[in-house]
Image (cartoon, rainbow, N blue to C red; front, side):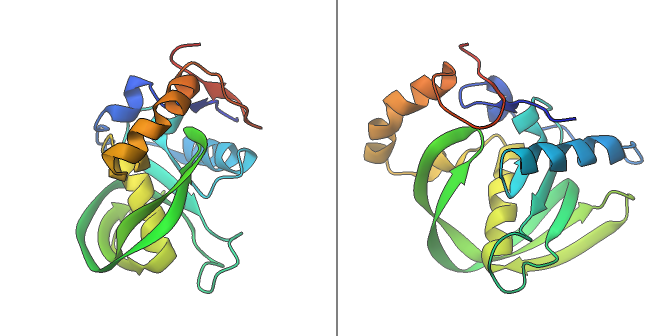
Amino acid sequence: MIYPIVMYGDPVLRQRAKDIEQGTDLKQLIEDMFETMHAANGIGLAAPQIGKSIRLFVVDGTELDEEGMENFRQAFINPQILEETGEPWEFEEGCLSIPNIRENVSRKADLKIRYYDEQWNLHEEAFDGMKARIIQHEYDHIEGKLFVDYLPALKKRLLKGKLADISKGKVDTEYRISAPGK
């Protein structure tokens, strides 16, 4: 099932998501999230982006033309970033909940994260580079944070009108959306 993507301005995107009870069957939801993400041509999708305030996100970097990404497709349940280290680096990010806006965001290059997979196996892993960036972006979603929060005040003011339009559903996308002001 393909869900509509929740747009900027919806309160669910600003809430810290709730932990999921261990053992909960998430197989269908995770499958639906991958399907929704692919239908919108995304590489990551967090549960709040489909209106569910739970600590779950999926990533799929297999389509990226970058070394080491060919098997980077997984779900993260109740993740917890343990540390972020390394040199910060800028890269242009976008978000399915903030369509047609892309801006440079600085993030640390390395991270260590603890999470459960779909079978509720606990993992503690280190990621770097693009993998770390995708995880950090999606992790922000379950913390109630968006990539535009990292932008300088002037840049945010310049985007204010576009963001207001997005929250009203006045935006062209190739995927279904759910806008708070629509």
